[in-house]
Length: 198
Image 1: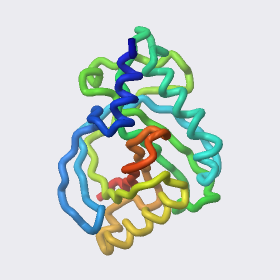
Image 2: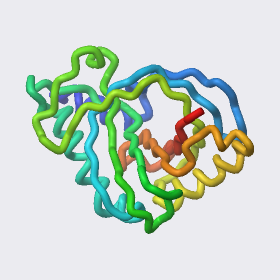
Image 3: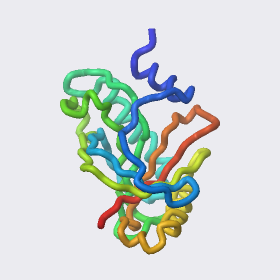
């Protein structure tokens, strides 16, 4: 018998619907680019610091499994929670992020809608709940298995497409979003989000 978490992972691999945070498209700004407004959300998160370009090899697995353990029952009520998408990573730095930039990376799993109001607390000290207020983001979407350089290149394309409007967005920091498990080989979806600040 498959657990709910295993079932959701299989559904995701097959391209079937799993829960995502709700948003409305405010405007389309270019090919595979748009402005979105997200409603307030809660995320279970964990953070690490290091070079941005080492994210995939050194940090992704460590952070992912801390969050996966949380939804698998490593919480104060030992409850299994459904997998959602996307898996986001917030990159924070003092200057515009480049491959060798020292960054703080915060990975997040979206908390399912039915758990948003009453969310189990993590029991791992490195894992925490994070609330995001309503936010507007500029988004660029692309496929394939994304490297750090892919995310940075698409960030630059997004900033260029924003033109004069880029001054209203946080172009120093960025968020990345991945919608697919590693074993899904085709029709993959990756995104870069830049938060509106003005």
